[in-house]
Length: 448
Image (cartoon, rainbow, N blue to C red; front, side, top):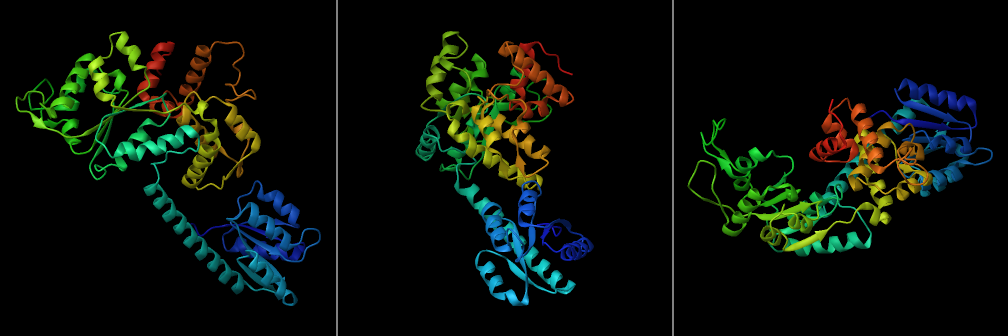
């Protein structure tokens, strides 16, 4: 918790506002003033405020009514009531309604310093409690998998059941639906949770290196093998192996992996000595593997071996009731990470998010919220923050162009904004780096 706070002084007397403004500025604080309760509420909509000093007696909306509204709409904002000696009773009432303290008129700098120290200490304690609560929640939840739709509730029910066995699991679903999060949750709930979880993207390792990466090699096994190295299948032994994009593996690699799953042994390149391995396999794919089998690109026997238990993760467009929950979760996450007081999404912006189909799924939504928080100029995110969506819930400026053309132009624009950095562009687009490489090739886009 920082020692510098955003303060708002609300008092209809100009001399009081100027006096407190002077003292707080002298103390190095950020200060705003308001001459009435209504002006204060207007400013609160756009100005992050940690602490308010509110005069109890003001024309129109008095301090008690303002306190009630602030505690309802901005509960994280501390409020200190300013009162005269004759209004102690009202100050006590305000304290019962949630005021953090009261300041008697006339006041002096020593009183202000003591109050500030007290409020900052309280906020430090609350910040620590929030952090610990967040850590506890992370330890007891399904590893950041968010959802309240029927489809997600069913997945939440399946995770602990699947975790109790050692059977291979196949996770299916589009890119960005959270397949790796589900794999990690299964591992976290299993008897192997204290041992390694190793995630490998099969589409990200060149064919020439797959065998040595997975099985390891002895010194001199091939050109460039100047040191012996353990394979990833040996490293993960005892834990859980997550093979993402399993549909990208070659036929030869499928045969080798099938043998490992059957025999529970591996032999590194350049060696004749098998090594025992024991791991739980979880695979994931965005492809229709049955179609891949029909096309001769995927082995039927390997498919049945990895597909003992199948869990399908629906795309975000099929569980739109989760969008608001996800958006609020990511808003809180990035607001905390960026230390910005951005805690609201306007109804118009939320409606826009819920109407959009999210081809990049949860990952695309997450990146959209992160960008909106980073660029936010007030505590509320408005619809304008999501300029890539039009009012019809479609990519902006789509017109009559083909989806391929829209996708091509959007990727080219993002890539240019990222200075040709593939990793950064992939993150913004909600795609894996290897997926973006494939799209660039398919769409005929040249890398910078």
